[in-house]
Amino acid sequence: MEIEKKDIRSLTKTQLRDFFVANGDKAFRGNQVYEWLWSKASHSFDDMTNVSKETRAMLEKHFVINHIQVDQMQRSEDGTVKNAVRLHDGLVVESVLIPTETRTTACVSSQVGCSLDCNFCATARLKRMRNLETGEIYDQVVAIDRESRLYYSRPLSNIVFMGMGEPLMNYNNVMKAIDMITSEEGLGMSPKRITVSTSGVSKMIKKMADDEVKFKLAVSLHSAIESTRNHIMPFTKNFPLTELREALQYWYHKTKSKVTYEYVVWKGINDDKASVDALVKFCKYVPCKVNLIEYNPIDDGEFQQASEEAINQYITALERNDIVAKVRRSRGKDIDAACGQLANKS
Image (cartoon, rainbow, N blue to C red; front, side):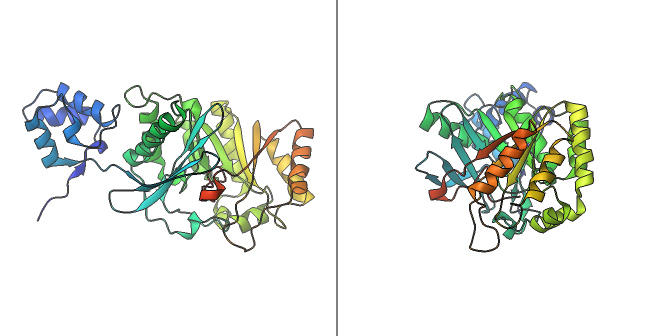
């Protein structure tokens, strides 16, 4: 029976160096291979041209590189690019490139399916099949950076973890991926250009603060009224608003980093004055800004886009209270790439 090979990208640089020493080679060989795996984002041992054929054959015998493949790429009329990303085990996730005049943003997935049960979300209808590995998250960013250079003649400028899945339910792999994305041994991106979006997993928000992360935090709030929030996102019964508020206050105390609230306004659900007043009150607990997000309905059910009048009611109230608010229009509608509305994710 053939032994299942280990993904070489699960090894640290020290472990790689130790592997080569244990196999009669020099430790620096581990440095070379590590550079190929991360800085050069190689998907094949054959690419490693400064490593001998014998060494490459040895690596092939012991390891695999579980890289992604962009199975299908769609380009929208507005320039948005949606990738259907096939993983080594045949499962598929999505990642999206969102261009503006001055930047290109990668929206990446962190899980296959989702752990949560948001009623408005297409991804939530897929059960969570597994967490993405560090390399699979990293590969999505590399692929979108290449597309950004190809189509827009500039490198990727920003990353948002707003694709499939709840990033904080795959905490270790997401943090390792961000470490590699921001490392000079990886892509060398500034952590200030990365935003991790959570549906409000309070204890993990506190853990991020304790871990002194340097990236930005966004929270998919959608209502500051407990009963409404629980209806929209039933799992939030385990993460009540009082806990979330305390976690966000802890976050700001430790990081001094503003929070962004992602907020979809739906007709007949959270488009009333009580909902507006509750959001304004919640926004006063920590320095923040609000992104009001246009909704792409996933069917003709309960969740439908609210009127412009309802959205303007929010903007007026927030601005009157000196809270920065922006309306985020859905991108790539013609290819159903709804990233930024959290890919219809919570």
